[in-house]
Image 1 (cartoon, helix red, strand yellow):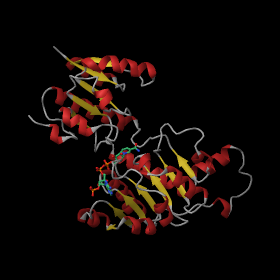
Image 2: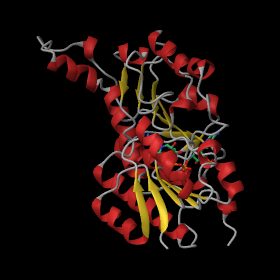
Image 3: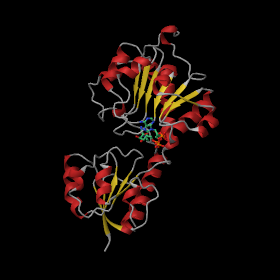
Image 4: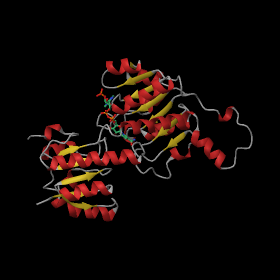
Length: 325
Ligand code: NAP
């Protein structure tokens, strides 16, 4: 008998066809109240789950006694109770690599947009307020040649360093758990302690995962170490940052600007003070959101799920200790 797969993310027709061939499929089109009720109904018979942006905790997982595998359509796995999945022997997979370059592109889009005030000034033109040649009041700051500070020198961090070093002639400094000689050599980069990086970088970019260790990593103390010209970019996860402290730093202009793709709560509340600040560029979590990359991520997740359900080790297994075969 075919195994039962529950999708809480719609896939392209070719990927749906592949899944239908291999499994009995339940598709939950959206995760509103009706969708969540459908999910709860489907979980008792589910062998596999595939989707993203849903907190899968022990309460939900307990509704799925037959669950063998969860395929996340994301590289970040902060939405999953990994310890509980591992304890239950459920294989969790993610989609690294295929989204690295696109997410780094998003990071650079935010770097350029904040430094050159692209959104603010484009809105001025659109509003019909470009009435004379612009002057210093509307000038931005250079990107090329400025110091790029990367916190979390992993796949996306490296892709950002590549753009900064080779494309914009930026000196690269970074902070990770430990120095990375190959990165130092490739990008002429230098490892820094977190306080040193915050003091020395013109652009402070977050590219690390949300974990118990990184939650709230950047707060008032860290913003105080940045200078009035520092531009802060977050393409990792909102909860790595104390958002109230960020708002304070932006309002007081103790930092120059922020480019933010991720937020403490998503979707971002319409009343957020961040949206009243002209020195903020906010995007709706679009790090990997291109047609090509989202399709590649979905294919990767389907490959991982079907491998796991066939008793094979998925290529992108996250909780490796759950693999006992
Ligand atoms: P990765 O290759 O695992 O890199 C993460 C890096 O963060 C690692 O190199 C690690 O350093 C570093 N790190 C972890 N904890 C740290 C800590 N406490 N202090 C300093 N450095 C720490 O992951 P990735 O593929 O680059 O993805 C990174 C994250 O980006 C994901 O987890 C996800 O949350 C986020 N993301 C967001 C979007 C978006 O749409 N905005 C898209 C894709 C990914 P070591 O190597 O030294 O351990």
